[in-house]
Length: 96
Image (tube, rainbow, N blue to C red):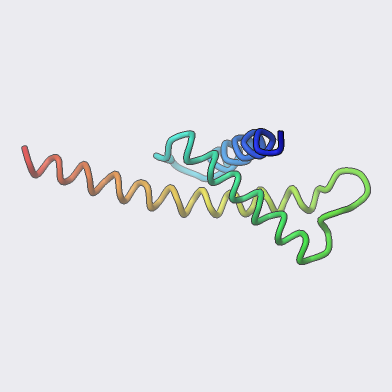
């Protein structure tokens, strides 16, 4: 059940990160979900390192670290994805 929860959290974080980043993103939903999962893992690691991973009530600081990490990861991965996609489109146009 933990892997299903990781996918759901990754999907939510990735979609929120994609909505916050200005401009159009080209990465597909599956890649956004993976970036969200990586953002959650990175945010948890940062929260643990700063000793704010476990607090009473809602762990707002941990969630903020997760979201910021997801935004950074989605932005970086999307730029690489767009560059790769752009190279493929240019190659196709040269062949024609």
